[in-house]
Image 1 (cartoon, helix red, strand yellow):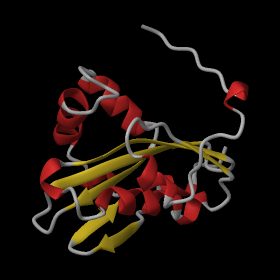
Image 2 (image 1 turned 60 degrees about the vertical axis):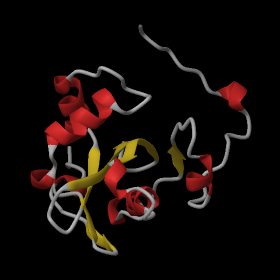
Image 3 (image 1 turned 45 degrees about the vertical axis):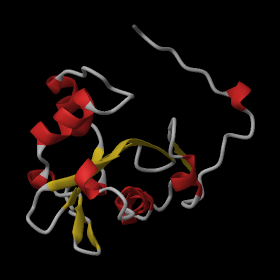
Length: 151
């Protein structure tokens, strides 16, 4: 089986003074875990090993301030061909209001190894307007979708 192309290459782009990168060596796992554990409404109390496993199985995007500090994060769960799920998009409070969440999401959507993806999904409680500017819309027939949640 051929590995996904993005497993070996690093994709980077600038957003003002910020660097958005898929370089795994740059990821600040402690800061990512802290945000997801303490601040994200979708993952309160998540275990560090769960965050690490999730990132290991995803294409991860970090956004970094000029001093190298983690400013934002997102990950894409994908088969690399037809389907992708944008997850865990966040911007650290000190860097909000600069369009960084949208820029990280746009970088994911425009990643050269994901150009064949036809079905992008995400879930959000409060950022519909941000994602609408990137082309996301409510699913036309939500009755087609199902989920199974474990406690």
